[in-house]
Image (cartoon, rainbow, N blue to C red; front, side, top):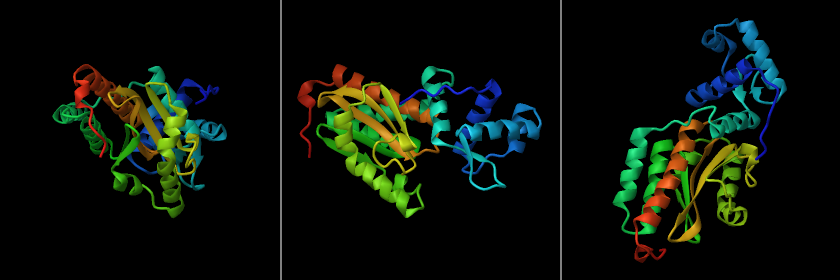
Length: 252
């Protein structure tokens, strides 16, 4: 994924980030009045900065009288800022502890531990959870994912992505500890309007196991990226350092 380095002022970057974070909380276009109060500048100044961000393709306006929402390119700048440490990942302690406990409760076999971890991710993020277990792809929370889309065409694109996700993972083998594919960046189902956040980890079943989530591009990236990366590291540590290889389960 290409690192975009636009010429933006610090305030414009912060406005972009604020739009993304507010839109993640409330699915409504963000207007200049709200941001003017946040940044303690005039609405006219905010409108000028937002127009600049729109011209560069980082924000878009659904209707002429509405505020702005992020584009895939805007989300990419935000995700890159999280990856670089400019924006801190959010560590939801309770969610992390619940996931850790669920993994421990299912450590009787590697596949049970992975399934339990995925189910916990679904509960913590409200997105679809995915993981490779040996040669199979485990999905949990399909209703959570499809409930985020109202248009039939979007649902079809999502279904195409899911149908081809397992062979794509085998072919692409993302090598970073944490990989984020936003909207149109997805090689399959690029028009579905979803983001894939996936972490690679080693398990007794494979040196290239993956766990992650798929959800609408409008989501809390700082939290969800932390959860996915943390759970990948936790699974690898527990499965490779604690669980003996005799516990490798046969796949049902």
